[in-house]
Image 1: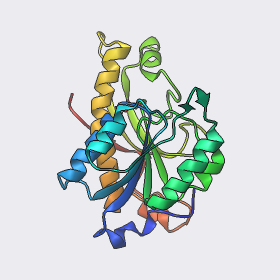
Image 2: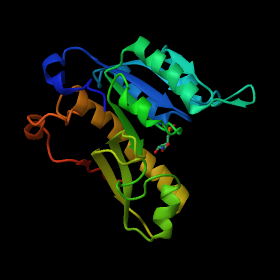
Image 3: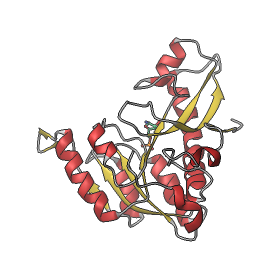
Length: 232
Ligand code: GRF
C-alpha cells in the first residue's frame, strides 16, 4: 500500500475525510454515502466519482449531488480501453482530487498491482461475501450451491491479490432454506448499505487505521474484522 495513510487521522478529525469513489453500476452504495454526508451523519467529503461504465446509474446519482464525475468507459466508441490507459487517467484524476481514502463500491475492473501500490490514498473494497470465503464473482449463487448457513459482506484493504487484503469489517446474515441467489443479493445489499458508512465512519473518526506497516500501530488496531450485527 501507499505510504500515505490514515494513521494520523485521530489528530485531524475536525476536517472531513476526503473520499473518492470508484463505481461500475447502480451506485446504491454511493447513494448511501451521499445521503449520510448530506445529512451530516458522516464526516466526509466525496471529492469525486470515477465510473468505468458510461451507462452506470451511479453517474446520475453523483451528478444530482453536484459531485464531480469522470467516466473512463471500458468500451469507448466500440474500442476497449485497456487497464493501463484506464489507470493512467484515473491516477491523474485522483491526484487532482487529493482524496484521503479511495472506496471501490461495486467497481468491477481488476486493478493492477502497480496502480494499487502507487495510489495516492489507501483503497478499500466492498465485497459480497464473508471473506476469505468466496472471493471473486457469483458469490450468492456459490453460497447457495454450497449449502452455507451464513453469508454476508466484507470491507477489505485492496491489495494486488484479488479480494485478499486485510478484512476490516463484516456484516453477516443467516441463510434461510427459501433463499435464492437473488434473495441473497437483496439481503446482502441491505447489509452493505449499513456496513460501508459504518466502516468509513470508523476510519474518519480514527477508530480504524489502515496503516499497518509500523509496529506501534499493532497496539492501536482493534482485533479485525469488526463485525456489525444487524437484525434482518
Ligand atoms: C454490490 O452489491 C457489491 O457487493 C458488488 O456490486 C454491487 C454494487 O452495488 N460488488 P451498487 O452499485 O452500489 O448498487
